[in-house]
Structures are given as structure tokens and as C-alpha cells.
Image (cartoon, rainbow, N blue to C red; front, side, top):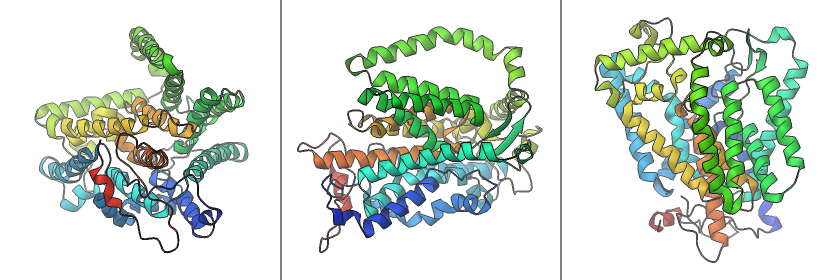
Length: 446
């Protein structure tokens, strides 16, 4: 990660948080939503939408610095993953789909955000916000998300909602759920997971009331069924992990309960009643999945390498090649990942998820609820990945990893005995100090 010598300490002077420190805080607060891809699909906000798409290019210098100086468990895996998804996959799309070189490169835009694994830690190493300030920024963004959700709900007329999901991504309407607001919920959900951890860490009831209120708002306004269910699962797992010496017994009990409920759940998921509740979305996904499997089966080696993807602006789309009404890889969860990147790419991406999970697990003894809640968000990503693939918004995973790197390094720097694992960040700079050597962590013992 970034070296321990670069980590901010708890004993920052008042001068360290004034002037440049405040500017650093403003910068971090402004750019965190871009790293988390909060505007990646908000076509109603064209400027922010374009900035989000181009953010990996804007932060490319930081990525290069991070590649040179940031080390963490899974760094080698990340580099191999980059070679595969940025090199092999575009090449396969040229071979299999007759894609052009510019089109092949453009088809990888959605996974450019994996580079935030290096650029965001490099930015934090440079700006050095205090850990408490960074936690407050994340929670403020979470509270702002819910305030905006409620504000839009009570002020917008019914005519503002659209059924056409091609032209609208935020204000949506469908016959099954009616009007709903599909705001990016990374910070909102992280706030809920933090409240859940706070309940168990501090044994207080007021966070429970806010947690219940948050879920009620999600069910009444957000209405994304899979996301809400997965968030509930992440809350249960977070609660189980907060039970001290009983945590593993609680986790195993949840796993056993899930295994016992699985047969009945699978029967219900295959029922006509469930299909009717989902409207046409289930039928559409089934048709897309069948088309994807048939295309991969036509040449079995495609399962291993994947076939890449096409952009929407090309002369021909995936739907025409697969001879379906429409085809969106992101509708297919891990099958979509395998279709595009192959089993090799899917295993590499799954490995990055597990590496991030390992990073966040290093914070489970932290006295800060938000530090612990980072693991819950990674669990949420894994739970939703069967419907919404990790490559849909990899910036969320990268932000969790970067924050975990930062907090682990800070804690390591303030303890007499270093933590097992790599270090992450620089000491607050004082006038006359030499710049920290961020390469020191590369030799840290794991």
C-alpha cells in the first residue's frame, strides 16, 4: 500500500488541519463520488456523466504514481488482471467480434475504474487527510444521499418519472413498482452499514432507529429489490461479525439458515408468481442468458478467453451478432463477466474482490464503526454480483480497498508494534520536511 512513514498520525496539530489541510478535505470530498462512480450512469446529468466516464484518464498520472509506489496484498493479482482486461479482452473482441482497435479499446471503458486501486491511494498519500476527517466526509456524503432521495421524492411531480430506461436512469417508473428514484447509493449504503456496526460497537439504540428509517426509505423510494435484499444480508453478516467470540458461530448459523432456505427459494424464483412480480425483466434476462451461452458454446474455447464486447456507437451491436432483440452484458451477473472476459478474467476479478475483502478484514478490530463497515460493503458487492456484475461499477470496490489501505496504514503507524501486512500512507507534512518515500512499503513483510 502506501508506506507507514506517509501515514497521518492521531496527534495532528491545529495548524495541520488549517489552510492546506482544509483544501485537501474539500478536494477529497469533491472527488470521492467520482472515484466511487456515483455519476457513471446518470445520463440526466451530462457534465458529471462525461466527467465520470473520463475520470480514469484525468487521474492517469495518479495511477502511474500508484503503480510505482503503492503496494498491497493482491497487487500482483491486480497487475495480471489489468493485462488481461485491458490487453487480452480487447484483442479477443477484434478476433471474435471483428471489432476495430478503437472500438475494442472503447469497449473496456467500464473497467477502467479498476485503476482506482492505485490512483486513489496515491491521491490520499499526497493530500493526507486525517482519518477522522475522511470518515466524516464519507458519512456526510451518505447523509446527503438520503436527504436528496427524500427531497426529490417530495418535490417532483409524477410527470418527472420515465418508463424509458434508455433515456432516464434516476427518475424511473414501471408498472410493478410505480415511480422510484434510482440514486447512486454507494455512500448511502455505507452509512447504513456504519450505523449497523455502531449499534454493536457502542451498544446504543439511536443508530438502530436510523438504520430502520434508512431501509424504509429504500423500500418506499429506491425500490431496487435485489440491492435492498443484499443490503439486508450484509447487515446481518455485519451484525454476526460484531458478536465477539460468538461471531463465527453466528456466521455459520446464517450460512446454515441460507442453505436450508435455498431449495424453497429456488422453487419460488422459478415460479410464475415470481416472474409476474418482475414483469418482463426476468424473461428478458433469460433470453439474454440463453443467447450468451449459445454463443460461447459455438466455440468452447470462448468460455476460457471470453469474447470481449462492442460499444453502442458502432455499426453493429451485440444484439445483432447474437440475433436477439437486445443484449446487455451487465444484465447477466457473473455469466456476463465470463462472456466478456472469460473464465480466466472472471477468476481474476473474483480474486480482486477477495483481496479487497482481506484488506477490509484487517480493520475488524478497529474502534471505528465505519472502518468495520467497509467489509460489509464488499460483502454487499459480492451478494449483488449475481445480478449486477462487479464490472458494472468497479470504482465502488476500489474505493473500499483504498480506504482500507489508508486506515490500516494509519493504525499501523500509531501502534508500537506494526500490523501484519503492508503499510499505507504518509505522515502529515510540516514546513521543511522532506517528501515521504512512498516506495518503502514495497519491501514490507506480509
